[in-house]
Amino acid sequence: MFGDVHAVLFDLDGTLIDSAPDLGAAADKMRTDRGLPSLPPAQYRPMAGAGARGMLGVAFNVAPEDPGYDALREEFFVNYENCMTQRTYAFEGVSDLLQALVLKGLPWGVVTNKASRFTDPLTRAMPLFASAATVISGDTTPHAKPHPEPLFEAARRLGVSAGRCVYVGDDERDIVAGLAAGMGTVAATYGYLGQQSDIGQWRAHAAIHSPLQLLNLLNCA
Image (cartoon, rainbow, N blue to C red):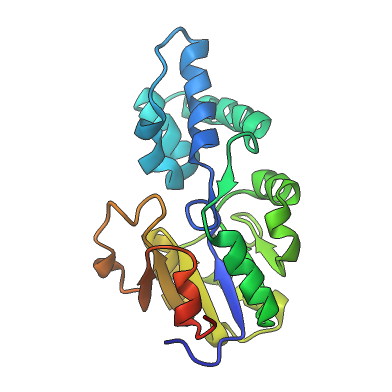
């Protein structure tokens, strides 16, 4: 489907890795530390793509504009730093997909809204990312997705035209950013939001239901 692709970029959480168990655990520890009952992981999972905002919304029904939110967010961040590699794993097929891209000579990278405070230690800890050509965090540029600047920055670091890149993500903001950058866009429906959203409204160029399906779109299968 996509012709003359020079690089493939991916969102992180919900696209390459399933970090929902650790994100949920970080928020749930805040509940149990306060004597509140634990919530089931399935309750946190759908909001994992929203990071602290999503996790704290589930755990305490609070929003960023509420009093005391900033203190809760920092407590969540500290909890997450202490556990973020304990239960996080790559989605099935992701390792094989990335190996196939490397064998085809296609550089790949990560563009995430996750802050470098978490992205850097997480990607260093997981062997999966050893072959990544670039990792762009939510605070690498002055803007985060859905702004296209992080994607432009990734393309610049790879020395590739943005129009020759494909971006894969499981959230509508990923597709919005990719389209704004002039990239080919692929919605990962196996992620956190894909199964619960009308991805047809995202206007992605294509959708995949498992990671390895991307190889067919890239004519690499």
